[in-house]
Image 1 (spheres, rainbow, N blue to C red):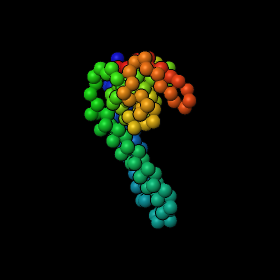
Image 2: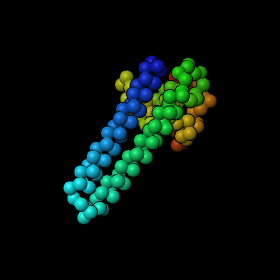
Image 3: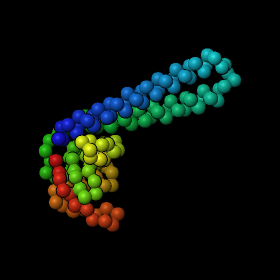
Image 4: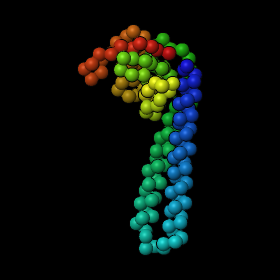
Length: 145
């Protein structure tokens, strides 16, 4: 399952990159149409569009960094939690990889976490059947792969 999960995550990251590139291309085309048809009178709307392009480019850069981090993860069986681990707990399911957020894989909600997040810092080094506390509540690790 882990290899399939990692292929799925890699595809999700690639899809997000494609989507963001498409948005940037569409906004640039729209911005060029505005330039040619409206003249200098609408400089403010063009500037707002440029700010939106810059915002999306920043998002794209973040996703590219996540893709780079993710591509370096080795898919190996883990007994203790660390980078590359898939973890099931009574709190939820987690993949220790990069900060990508929530995905649905094989009807399971899985949170893709960077090992720098507060929850990941609690989990790193723990093993199956260990317990941990988060926000005053106790949880148990039920599976580590």
